Length: 102
Image (cartoon, rainbow, N blue to C red):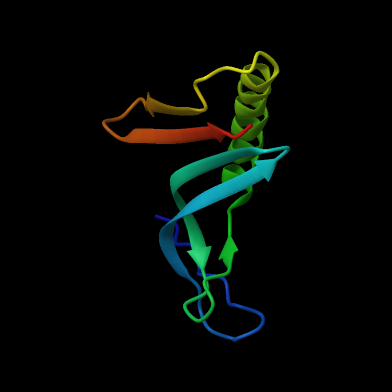
């Protein structure tokens, strides 16, 4: 069994905590929120450090959702918020939210 040591916050010199957070990205009037992402969080100021695997997954997800949201903007859709849930191979449920403002 392997154990992962918690990273240390370089500013506060405290061990970061493994917690859930919401990732948010904004571009050209489009906001994408990905809740329930596990990440390392500084207990003092809440600064997050995502694992490389989570960063890779977030980048792919954001790119895909931006395409859909930009298409909705182009056609001036009245539907400006989408919530997409994806069930993983286990019993966990991943929820992804996309909102576009015009």
